[in-house]
Length: 461
Ligand SMILES: [Zn+2]
Image 1 (tube, rainbow, N blue to C red):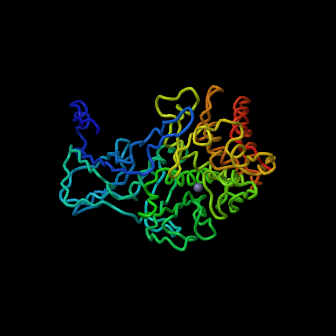
Image 2: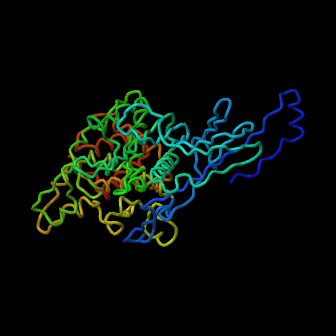
């Protein structure tokens, strides 16, 4: 709650003697009810076993959150509506006083000039203001009073998705402004045929040509789709929602450049860098299907860069970089953790916390077979999880005196795309080139190379 409002000082009143009598404000505060199904999962193995993310770790049992940046409208019986965005305390001031008004809380937010709009038209790729609202009618709102509306979103999964997306936007709010992210909810909930499951949609790369969602990024708009179905409950998975927002934030940051082009990251359509089936069973842990990937599968470096970056944005929303997951600091506080679906990941170690060998998951698990030299099969490949750990490790490594900022990480992503020449197998080399154009510190350049070697992302063709 904010402190009680104070009356004007007499001196100030005297100074305003010739002004019209000021109408005192009233204040509306909004408190949301968040309930996730993927919070508070703990790293299962390794030195940080038992640790979890820093924020909303108890949200699976439901938590109240002051809603920052949500749009509130006061609609009086006569006269014009007044709309305000709540501040960092989840409150907004309105002028005067009104009787019998509607108080409307919309399913949209704004943080640092960036908009998040939750709506029900995921396949309409044009600006929309449609969405959902809470409407409280016959409200008497008097000067110098504070009115708090609670339990917004209680029991309604798609509102949790909005609050999750808004939190992610807030954690990355200082990197750009003036953007619009349309979080389109698909509620058709049809589970067949499998190739077009509408109850399992979570994407930032979809629509006609698989790129309609990215077709207006140079105008500052990005589209996301998320199924809101009891069969999958994606809207209650904060890791999924923040991952998709991560794609949008990266693409919109890239598109801030006048040299940027609309569309997806180049050469990201070939999913699954197939393993030789003869290498089973070890390889099977890294083999996906021809039209999907997971955090564990062996992919082309293009996919792993794209997906790993979205994982990184999400992870950096839920975990603070001051507890980066270093060995030796286990047992207290929250070390860096990121849950993907039901699997908690250590942000520094593959194999959910136990993997510390150089080469990450790709080189240690995806291709390990007695008597076989698998090194050639690493060419052009990586796993999404290895890229996530690589980016997080570089981002949090302060051994050079200062670690890279979120904005500097996005600048590397941006420059990687702006430089062009991206194939499905050379994203690491191109990202490294971008980094070296932006980073002059030989120490930081060295840390990049060290983490790339340790996490196994440096296997371009
Ligand atoms: Zn993704």
